[in-house]
Length: 303
Image (cartoon, rainbow, N blue to C red; front, side, top):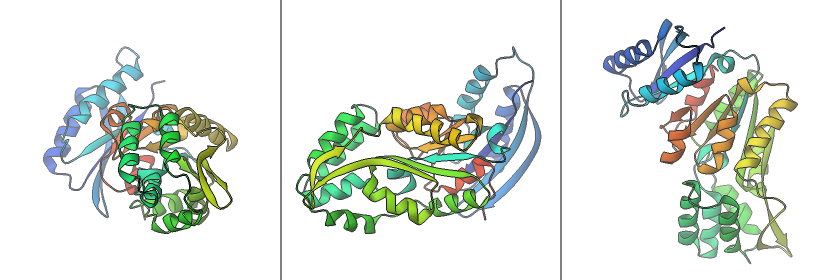
């Protein structure tokens, strides 16, 4: 039996011309539109098209890739369109996992820490290259953390107080959990920052790197294995399995190359205001600074 999908278009303002182009792209790639509805949310509009596949060589995967590619060119400046498997949207329990820096929160924590060490410019340059996939993440992390050696542990609390959640982040977690879903965060950043944030938000699972601290100061090292792209994917599979949630009901959201394996392991991998290579590899893009869009993609009511 063929898989079923829902196309979700979203943008700051969806015009009738945008919607007509989206309909033409859908039907032109062998989809029937079973129903269509428009939604208005704070900061963006959405249109939801429930789809059915027409029989075509029986190769859903290839057709899905072609459809997503075609839709990426429609209304590119005004609208984005995601094709979401109904196994995710209709699941009674879903598993949502997010990256932290520049996804769940607006900043890159290591750059905030580096500002205290006078190495912010150097660290920001390495971070950008790592997120573009130009550097090995573990090596880049060790290089950046080494610049923090000697900082007093008090800077962690100072930086934690400066953290700004992304727009919609708190609502995404609260409403997903209220609906019975599971929400996790996994980060190439640091547990000393993520742990209090996870407790504040009520996340079900959270994992990040541990900064080594000796005699009240950062040593410039991390303790234990680095949380890299492979670790993120493993945690998605392990945590969702522990909750009895099938991979087909999982969604992963991230912005950098370190998130690609996790996004590939999920039923829907979402690039959040991401680097070009990450957007190209993702199943869906959110190009607005608003995580409320993720609720719409997953089929969770935005209140």
